[in-house]
Image (tube, rainbow, N blue to C red):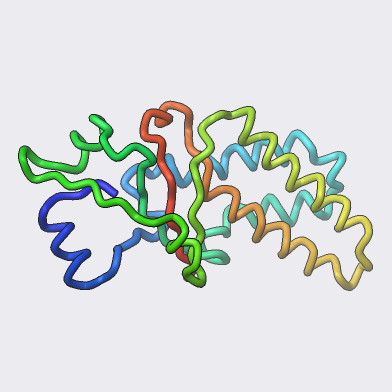
Length: 180
C-alpha cells in the first residue's frame, strides 16, 4: 500500500487502514466500468435469461451501491512501482507498506482480490455467474425466485469489485474489500 509519512503515521497509530466507499473512488469510471459491462452482457443475453430475470437484474445492477455497500483499500502487487510512487508519494516522503495476504484473509467481512484487467476474462467471469444464475432461476420454485435473483445480484456485486479497464493494468492492483 503506497502512502506518505502522514499516511504511515495514521495507519500505525490507529492500527487501521482506511478504506473508501466503492462509489466514491478517486476515478468514478472504476465504479461504472463493471456496471456497464454487466449491463451490456445482460442486454446480449436477455432472450436466454428470460424477460422476468432480465428485468429484475437490469434494475438491480444500478442499485448495487445501496444494496451491497462496501469499502475498498487499494494495494499493489509490486512493492516498487514507479507509477505508484509518483501517484502517492511526495519527494522523499513515500512509503510502501507490505501486508500479509494470509493475515488479511483471516479477517471476517474482508475479501482480498486481484483486479481483472482483461476484458475477455471479465466477460468470462460474468458469463459464468449468469449461466449458474439462469440454471438456478429455472430450477427454483416460483416462490423462491426472488431469493435466487437476490443471490445472483450479490455474486455479481462481488465480481464487479474486481473489474477494471485494461488501461490501468500497470497498477497491478489488489483490493482489500470490507462489506458494510
